[in-house]
Length: 229
Image 1: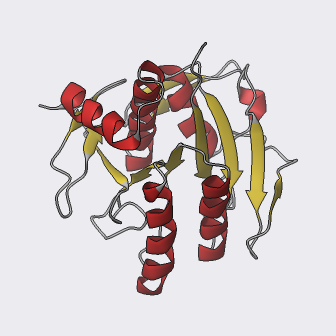
Image 2 (image 1 turned 120 degrees about the horizontal axis):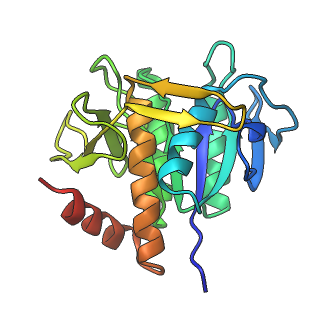
């Protein structure tokens, strides 16, 4: 039986028409935290679309779920939207989530800590971009989240394990990629922890495919062995 890994991309939405294979689900969360099917698609590649492109390039046989909580114009959302997206992934038991967003507002700490703890406790893996400016960013800087930063010396499908200690990422990865989407255009991506995060998500998905039935700790231990330096 083929083990197909499902990944939730929590961002500003994935536009299906840029890919041959559509998302298995496209959801959206409004400002009040209500989650419904997403019936709209952006005409140009959104940030979430580009991150999905990176994931699919390096892990083409995964299944993606798009959860749109950010405005495609402002790339901003609310705490209620993020909590609703995480709660939905918790209830649906989505084992792998990719997040290129976060908050540094101190009042958001405890609600997000509770949401993340619940997910980690039931074996889910959250991969999140750390702050580009060195500022604390949640959920990336919460215990149990896989934290990622870019390494500007890397290109393509490249990543390495780090210490994961305070203010250090769990993984460095490449943020430099070239994507060819179904609009017959090429997209050169450079600079950004979010693009590096998509690489680590793809690598974890590959490990999950290779180790069907393995728990979160087993997956992460093997990731550290394979990509340690």
